[in-house]
Structures are given as structure tokens and as C-alpha cells.
Length: 234
Image (cartoon, rainbow, N blue to C red; front, side, top):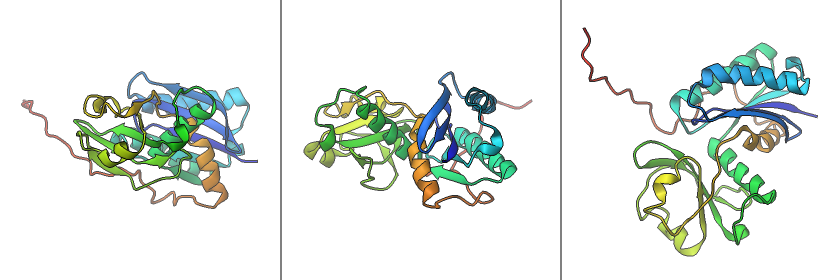
């Protein structure tokens, strides 16, 4: 039996869960802005008390590794690494787009979604990368990746070949900017959640695919750029 603490903080949503053998048993999340640094520790403490799990009973910590918000990813990964150091347990990194696709698959299996011909569709989770750009990756309906993670500028031609041959299902916080330029796609309301990490993290832990805690860094995809303030300093 494996108990894994799951942390996803790569977007506006701060989400923390505990999973037993790949099944989520408790969850805390908030979409009230990016004060993740304050909330993640509180959520972990609440979950441990709620489930009766002692910190030293955890077998691993899983974290959404990106791509996503630079600050959000840093907070989640830093917190996860600190726990792993202190408890001497493995760290499992899960791609945030993979986890987002997993949430959509779980909701479809639970009958929450109403999408025809799901099994033949292509899943397209998107994370907002500002302006008209998104981070994305394509998956089949079972969650198998069909390509690599990429940063895409959204235009009428984005994934035009896929949309021509398949039903493209778009979701995530980058989806809104696609509706006008890609009206032929299908849109569903799916948001990032730690529950998307549960099964994937268990698979990686079982396979021994853990991270080097000392050197592990979030997957930003693009370099972080600091824009100088235009305000005059006195």
C-alpha cells in the first residue's frame, strides 16, 4: 500500500490531495488567486488531520512539474522537495498537462462529461502562457501522449490538421482564448487538480521513476523573463 501526497500549484488553482494506491482519498483546493505559498502548507496539514495519516506514513510526494506559472511551480516544487528531504521519501514529478488530461479522463469515466464519440477524440489540455500563447500537449482518449509538450501561439491554423480529421477536445485555463479562432473544436470545463496526479504518480513510483531531489527543477518550457518596471525610482 502506497500513500502519496499530491501537490499541483502550476496555475491559479492551489490543489493538494492524498492518494492511497493511486486512488484519491482526500482533497483540498482553492481558486482564489495565487497565494499558494500561504495555502499549500495549510492544506497539507488539514489533509493529514482529516485522514489520520502521520507524515512519516507517507511513501512519496508527487508534484505537478509544469509547464505553468513560474511562481506557482516554484512554490509547489520547493515545498515538495522540503517534505521529501525532511521525511526521507522519494519525489515523483508528473507533467502538469498529463495530469490535466487525467482529470478529463476521470470525469468522463464518472459520467460528468457529455461528449459524444469520446473514444475517437483527441484531448488537448492547455495552460495559459499569456497573450495568445498556450502550453499544450495532445493525447488520445486513453491518456496516451501523441506528441511532446509545446508552446503554441493560438491562430486559426493551430492543430488544423487534427481538427480536420478528429474531434479536438480543448480544456484548461488556456482554452478561452481559442474559442473564437477555433470554433470547430469541442470545449469542456476541466481545471488542474491534484487528483490528476494520483494514478500517474503511483505508476511512476511503482516503476521506480523518481526524481533526484537535489537537482530536480520545474519544467518551465520557456525561460523566465523579468520585465523591468517603468516606474521611476526615487
